[in-house]
Length: 266
Image (cartoon, rainbow, N blue to C red; front, side, top):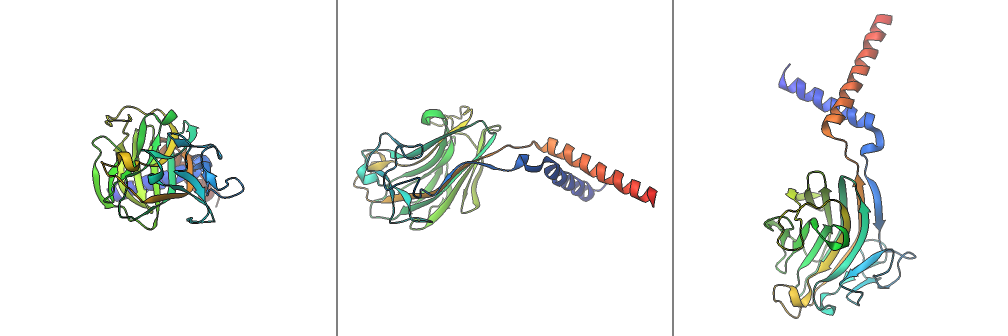
């Protein structure tokens, strides 16, 4: 059998595997919001629809109705109103093997910019699965062992769709901006400090925050602002490749049997 024919059969089998698996491989939305009324009202975000603020509720993180990606409301984070790291987080517990966390993020440019973070963590904000940091110079750091700076830079003053795809079976994650993958198969960070790759057993918290005037690399007097809209968390009950291929070959065999039966009956 030629390599091309084998490849074709494998692709066909995988396709039939997906068909026979039906909806089991489809993403299931665990939480989604555009921060709109009546669920949300303008003012402090903490306490609304399960959202909390780290380290404590304050004017630095609010629902506002003056600037949004869609609809009329979004969340803003104002670093100048915080004493240090400050942001919004939501607990959505799941044991799904693959979790997708996404949001529209807008970072406004300013004369003195702070560091920003979009990340997924374990329970009680302990144990980083993965995410990104955006520095004052718009460089992007991937929250993975070694904390690498990648070639892609952040574009300020525009909405950017940020998507984290987190695989808790392999303990790896991908990052995409506006649908373009900028980092893939990155090991989970593991801890909240030096990123040594410890196991993060399950998804729990999504976090959007600023490092504020006290902790943004010694920068003081920051005057930028960040916005978040259309936040969602989805689970993907992943069917293993070989299980999918087994289903697929079974489907191909069933079709071949029907074809032979039809020819015999003709």
